[in-house]
Image (cartoon, rainbow, N blue to C red; front, top):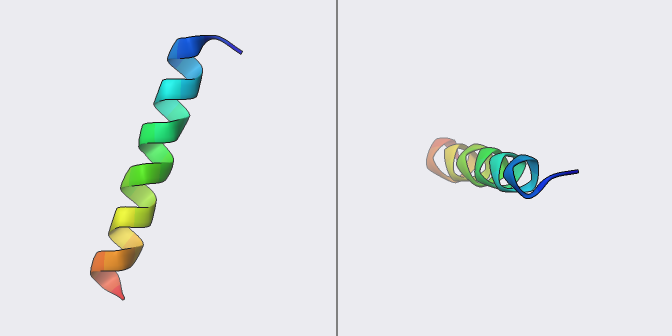
Amino acid sequence: MTLAYKLFYFSLFFIISGYGEVNA
């Protein structure tokens, strides 16, 4: 797994968790 992939998935997870906080 390259660094770019890690960064991509980390930001994706961060955005999703942020959405969950806003919706909740």
